[in-house]
Image (tube, rainbow, N blue to C red; front, side, top):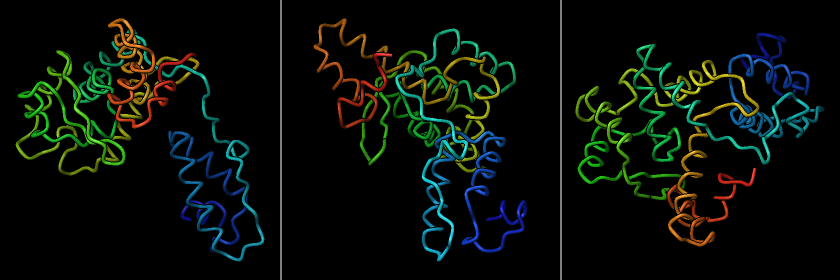
Length: 247
């Protein structure tokens, strides 16, 4: 509403039409917002607009409004060169904490919000037990064994903050602000490629490696899918296929 009031002098939501929505999408893209964020915004706008006696009908076609299409059958994983380069950039700019977020996402297959919400106490317990307790979507709890790189990242992170604090969210900031900073950092520093790098792509990398390890150990494809799904925090084994291909 602030956007259309400023740009189009509109004062009533019922007067919003598709041209205003398309302009808002372009504005969000210029601000660096990703397709998923924009789709959520559009869903909210449509919901409230539907409650008004408007003569305008808002299109449900997000792509027609300028939203980038969802990638289908495309590998979103990072290769080793992508990952090492991004970590080095973070370290060279004195953003070691971002490097540690990326390492934990890469090594343990964590969602970005699962990393950002970690407390120092979580790190200390994980270091003592050799595995990290993660609460994922729907409250699903899983335990992910630490790798040497993940252990080193947790040690560095816990030494940066006092007891009782979050590892990566300062007291004067919100989790969503930190998440956006990480996402913007990746977007601004990745090399051009067919499928843009995202923090979520690190889960693809971890899933593919874990799935391959399961098969190498003698597991059937079905059991490997189940084991990988459990590692990622998914209840349905078939979700694994989204991460491991074929691409």
